[in-house]
Image: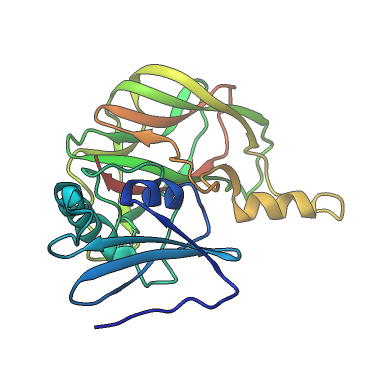
Length: 281
């Protein structure tokens, strides 16, 4: 059994469960808390000089609000099933929470997902060639692209060109040569149907996401270009899911993301790293 007392400097506002959820979900930097005894749950969060409180009874609702017994019981189920595990933990991630109903299950306190990366290593950037493709053929998992990096990997003597490339969302392709998908955690497994490929043909483009410029020129360092080459050597980030609350490019069944080289180049190579997560539908 536990209890909590709010200091006199805090204003206390009381809500129904539905009102409390709506208010809580409109905030981005607060974490839920609760205390309980044999009779009820007291659920709350702090926001500035105020504390926002909701009470849910464990059993019979006391007089004079016994007419609300059915609603109380539904609220209790929603709280214990979807919210209780998120409470009393200062490290809860709020990134994926945007809306909720009594039938929606929130992410657990550990809201990370199986994470993977693909190295498309030293790919010749031929004209109109799909140099890197990530494809989701899974009917049970979605793929969320987290980051894409592009590397000029040409350190031997090659006079290259400025390469025009584009990142595309695709809806069909004829599979090419498979590239291994690696895991960040060895207990994770790549979902069946998810693949990484080069040399893909028969592509149907849904839309162009963005255009990219890179080069396959030899990295001949001078005092004037060393800062530029540092970017290329470290991997220029061409896509990054970095905004809280943004889903990121999401691939559902029979969808993919691809880099297509547009300009003509017969020498040298470029490398790419795709990072992505596998998440429940």
